[in-house]
Length: 354
Image 1 (tube, one colour):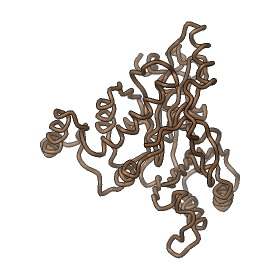
Image 2: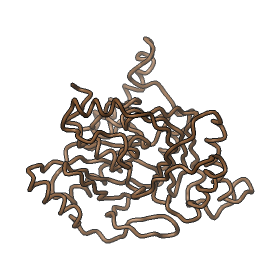
Image 3: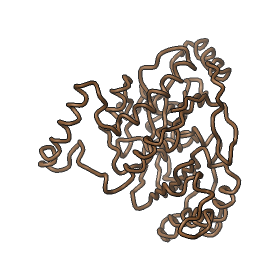
Image 4: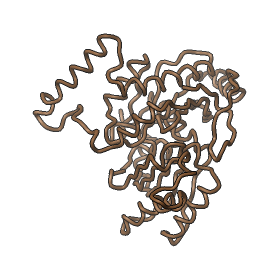
């Protein structure tokens, strides 16, 4: 994988990292100095295992959040994500729902344990994800000048990516996997981006009681999340009630690995690429006509700010909505990693462990 620091330039409508690799950029140094001056040297580390690349971010106790690194993915990594998005890839996984599931899953579990006993990742899929995580860890440690021991991670809402996979990824890399009290036991990108855009989190996380009360009184928010990278377009229609609560059922979450930006020059089913993209963006709203329209659109990905994509997105929203929602796109290429870092920073003060 290509290791690239987060110095951005637009190339062909997407944002990629430059090949320049200076360590400890000014933004990180300033945040580290201020944190040490306040006697608060710790920070939260967040990764995002998204499609075609992976970003890393830091969140400091003074409120500063910095996206610090980006790793471009290998084809094998992208293929793993594509396959894990398929219903046909689902399998039994703990925690089991039925009494016989543990017995039926035993052969698979034995194979995973045997691989781990030989020093291998628990599965080939875990190996590809671990390589991404390891490369991100290396860059974060170069940026901060210190080792990191734990991190949070955001992922796509993949039907066949399970908690045990992420735990095995972190175990193989040698990091502590930070888990959060979220609905699906895995921090999906929609929740992470919602937090990364500064929504759904209490203002004073150190005061656990006040934080719990504030988050419990937050109103429900209907959001549309759109991820657009070189290899995928995803669209979801979800309900959030604080960043910790996400309702994102699979029937309101669309994946298309044939509509990433790299397919822009191709015809899709003999139709113009951008026409198909526009139809996909509208599809989630057309299929849910009685669902409350989203108040916010959360944009994610390193191709999301492409001018043509922005025009197609706004046209799709205009076609299906009477009022244009708030469209959030600032730092969209690293916003889910930023949200994961924010979750990680708050772990010692988790209000739900009172």
